[in-house]
Length: 404
Image (tube, rainbow, N blue to C red; front, side, top):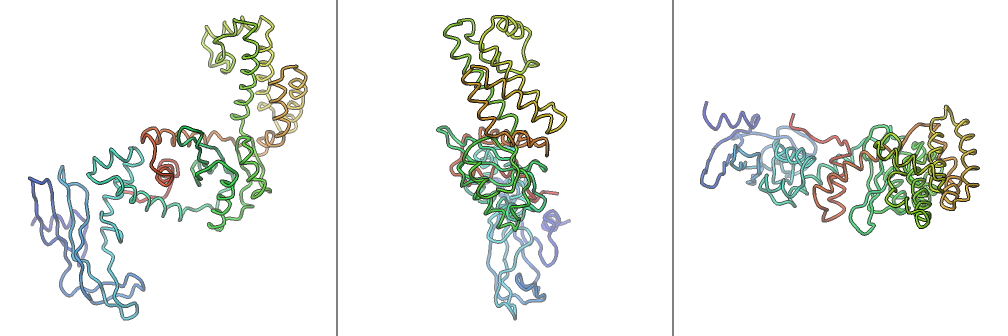
């Protein structure tokens, strides 16, 4: 089999395309394949799809292809422009590359796959391209996939913020809790983030009434945005964030009391850990502290009893237990606990709504862990657009092209 014919088969070329020339330069580690079409060939119009259009003229183009062993490979071809009786002179789309790209489809798909596991700068070095070229490739496919994403079954949405850099700069991530994927990302955690999401749903022709539940923490800006744009949706306050606030109240009690009880020093995490996570030494230490009749021990007991609410069999029982807990907390004479109890009272229904739908933000937390791993791997991003691209790559479950 001739070399040119072999490469034609390897590239999967079909008539009228074929490899007409092969040049190999080992000193520059480069392989050049010239592709041509048979004389007298006719092509379909790229717009109206009219077949059998004659060639008007040609333009010579070059594309970067997958490496040939350790050598960079390039495809060069005469790309025809056809004369369509309806549309006029139009550029023919070649089967190995998308219009306007300087890379073959296989090269771009490989970049997509590797970018989900690697930082862009080292990936660019491996592929011997500029990082900006990779970002353009990734941005094209991610934007296209996001635009084509089907949200017709989106009903339960989780909302959480992610710190994009030091200095309390955050982005908002919204995810589909049923399909465990990111559906929208906003460069703020203000109420405008919810407004942007509502506008996005409109652009996708998804009625806001379709969203039945939002699972989130108690961040006021999110609550304000949801009240304005999704007032019909049921809010579910995430258990994890609620218990984080509860543990903060316990620690505030400990900080006040440690001035009088030196034995409370360096015991913060003993009070905050779940019992099953304590080591034997920590468990013994906690038991000895509880025997001292400390305010911190009372605060800890109140917070631990709050966990029992989620063991209720239904919403009615949970409401009864929460009322009993609220009475105990507000009569505890522990100011941080009383303040936390007021927060619980202000978000009463949202806490109990979990018994209607049984959703949590644990899925969003898992997605955020993927995002944070990608951010650490990259040591930051030059722009929000780049960060958004990576978020959808690692956590968006987009319908991206594959090598298969």
